[in-house]
Length: 141
Length: 449
Image (tube, rainbow over all chains, first blue to last red; front, side, top):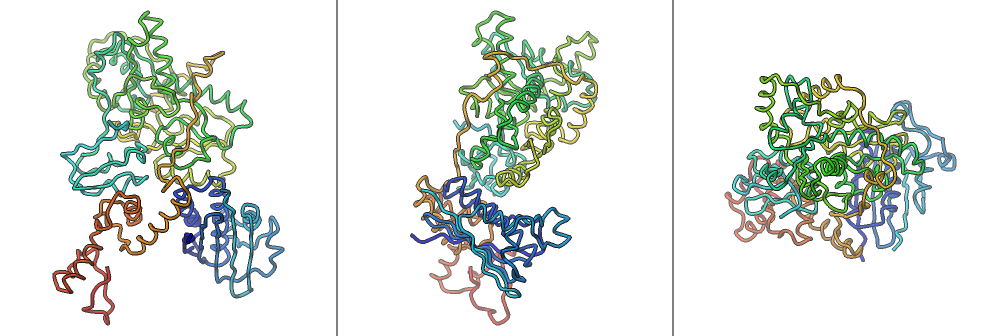
């Protein structure tokens, strides 16, 4: 069967509104009757991805594909890229600026949380060109 | 008859589509010039009642004539009632007046609320393994929302019945003992601030069967109380001291009242149904990890903002606050022992009833979602409401679910007519909000609908 494709633009510079895409995705996934646990994990992954794109890349786009047994979330931006992915994956490591930190973000848990809640996480990044974070979540039948 | 207390007065409805846009669960549609409510989606929040410009959507409490059906009638006033009166300085005046309009006894809902405050305090101290944050289970609209949309949060509910329900159980027992009447000859009626509680009285969310015989709207009772209250003042008689709760119980009438009994816990207090929905979404994703307890009130300022109230919620809150200043902290402790302890608990677990599910079969649901998205891409995205649905998305869903025809979209029909008749000036007319600015080159060409 054809997969369901959902596309959400994520605006840069607006930390307060970040999370809107994950809320919208969650509503759609609930309509499909996916298991609550999968929906929750997908929503957390997406939320963390959104926050990252707003803080570091001035926004981007979130694409979601829902198939019968897998959800794929792809967060694409044209931001500065990640120079050292291994370092970025460490809990507590963050390059977030003072504004984001004042708002309670930048705890260095974004990528680690995505890794924790997704079944697969892949990061393609090029310094100066942008980053694509792809997360896959298995849907138990 | 629908189990909901929200009803449409058919003659008054002009099909104006105001209500469909404000419904937080997209539960209203307009067909053939009249609104109708999708029962399985309605959460009784009362939003439509407030916005209807023709006063066609109403909520009805029971008729006072029902008091004739019983030998002994007990009034269960919700604390929000006390905030409706100007210059009231003694709650006993309200309670005594209730005995002059057909009730034989009074049992304050705030008394049961006070017991629940104490119960919750004991429970949350003992229940270390409870899901955190705990979510209050005292607002029926919130219970319905969680049941329909937030399955993961069901286990977070405090597992305590509504104050009105505990009051009903205890009031019936107390009245049966005092009058020696069989319990079924005793009528127990709550005086409620909102349609959600009127519905809950009829069809409880967490009890096996209804414990109330009915519910009257505060608005209806208020009008009847004014004369007897004035008479009681003029007669100068000593009021019977009927009040049996302190400020802990009475405080449940406003938002924050339930939370006040949870010292030492980090609590979030939310009012207004949109805020409640937003908060539930955030708790579901664990975004407020420090919170221990979340009090959710669907109405602005809590129960004083219910659609059955008379006073503006902020004024009512002020008045209730002034009354509370004269009360002791508490008059009731939860000392139920043995099986009685279970009176405060849910009698059945809330089960997830997803009103928004496209299909019980996941494959079929996905097929429908694809059809919905495909159709939505061919709709104008103006959310004009002319089709009777609140948004183009809701309309697409209605079409796919068989609740509407694609021809109900005036833009689709218009495009088809133009196609059939060929372009003409009259066909190109659009009301101002729908006109699209044409790029100069495209002038005179057909607007894309």
